[in-house]
Structure formats: structure tokens, C-alpha cells
Length: 263
Image 1 (cartoon, rainbow, N blue to C red):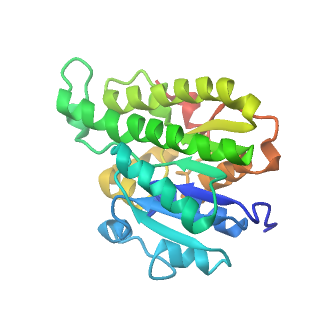
Image 2 (image 1 turned 90 degrees about the vertical axis):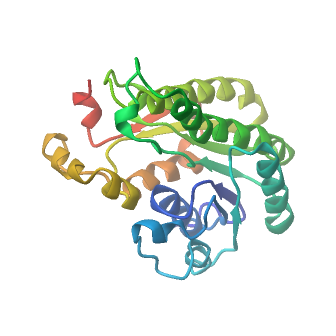
């Protein structure tokens, strides 16, 4: 793989397993030094996700780059500020931010719009939307100092769905699309590209454990399979390299065509 990101520093939130881990390894393979954030850096153990080394940071280092791991709660603004200061100190700056932290981390049956639990809603907004806002707002000044930057926010096809389930999650992810477009307009003159991805039905270790029946959905997806973390990481590569030099403010749906059949 061409090391297009040699000399760059990438930050991946929620990077200790699943999609975040795939993004971190992709950045490392492209030559970027990688800061891996998670609330628990050993998160892969929870769902028995097999690593090729002791930690995701070690997996990145095996690809010939520097890597640091920082446990921080992205809903805590002070913790986010301290994290980015540490990254600049240890790795020399910040060029790329991939806002992956979040997820549908409350029971789906409590997420119907007319009855959804308000504590659940606040939690889902915090871990998905507010974590993204904190990271963007704190990272942007570091990128401005370097005169350029790439931010990839993570939404979901739930943002566009009319389904009566996962409403809290969909609301949070829809807000991330709006945030992305506004920041792209604001920060384009500063050389900062800000885009968004919206994955759907990706076979991560957590999703497989939470929703074991989703494998049956593959038969209705136009490409006839669930997505893999690597499928999504390839799109992130596009948005973090010169391949997307004239792309900003966009939300790319990564779903194997599943969105074509979504309600």
C-alpha cells in the first residue's frame, strides 16, 4: 500500500476494537502515526475480537509507525482537551481526526420515539453527538496551526431511516451530518476538509454480539453480504488522502446498497 500519509498524525476515537480499530490500522498502513483513543483500550476483549498483537497500538507499530493509546471519555470536555494536548506533545501535531466513538449503547426496545427513555436519549446524544462536537472543536485549532486537516465524522444510515426503532441513535447521527456540513463550510478556507460516513449493517464484533440475527439481512442487501470493517476503512482512506482533495461537506453511505431498500 502506498504510504500516502507518511509524516501525518491521525487520531481515532473509539479505536480499540471494531470499526475504529480498522480505521487505525488503515491509517498506520498508509504511513500515519496513530493516536488510539477509547474509554477502555482493552475493549476488544469484551467481544473476543482477536488482535494480531497485544494492543491496537502494537498492531499500528508493527506497520512501521509511532502509536500512542489514550483512555479518555469523549463526553468529558476536559478529558478531550487533555488528550489532544498529549497527542501533540507525543506525536508532534494533529492532521487527521476520525470521530468513531459512539454507538447504539442502550436497549433498542427503549428507543421508540413516542416512548423512548429520556435518560437513554441524553446518554446516546452524549456518546455520539457531543463526543463528536468536543473532538472537532478541540482538534480544529491544532489543524489550523498546520494549515490543513482532515476530519471524518461517523454517522449511520439510521440518520435517514423512517423506522420507529433506534430513534435516539438516528437523531444523534442525523445531527452529525448537519454538523459536518456546517463545519465544512466554515473551515474550508482554512484548508480543513470535513466529511462524514454512514455505515449500515457492518459485521463488527460488537454488532455480531448485539444483533446476532442480522446475518439474515444479507439476503436482502443488493451486494448479498454484510459489510466488513475493512470495507468502511477503505472509504475512510479516500476521505483522508489526496483522492478526495476536492471533496468536503459530504456524507458517504457505506451499505452495500442496503440503503436503497431502507424505510
